[in-house]
Image 1 (cartoon, rainbow, N blue to C red):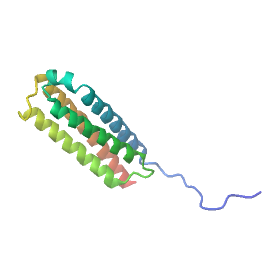
Image 2 (spheres, rainbow, N blue to C red; image 1 turned 120 degrees about the vertical axis):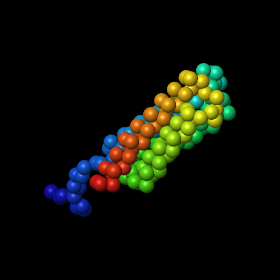
Image 3 (cartoon, rainbow, N blue to C red; image 1 turned 60 degrees about the vertical axis):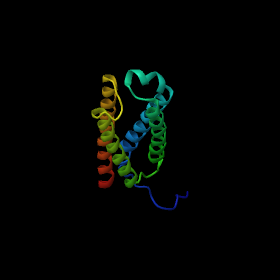
Length: 140
């Protein structure tokens, strides 16, 4: 009988599993939200006060972000610097949504303000979860 030659596999703890999962969830939810912003730009304009001139580029940007998240999550070994960019992007998105909610940059309705605040909360949660994953990735 022969035995396989080469290096033996040593099981290592997969520190990227939870991070990969949250990146994928973030990517899919970002894609869905981007599609909604594009497909429902006109119908949502009135109830939210969000002009289509804002929601269409916002939707396109979200689809691009979703694609980037999918690519990052698909790496065999997720690069820490990519996750750092994701965390920074989500943090900036959170701040931007808060600015839009609390200033009169665009004429949001009450429902539009609530929509922006809910978006800021969701993005902040993703940023926090991804930051925790990044710390675990660096520690592992």
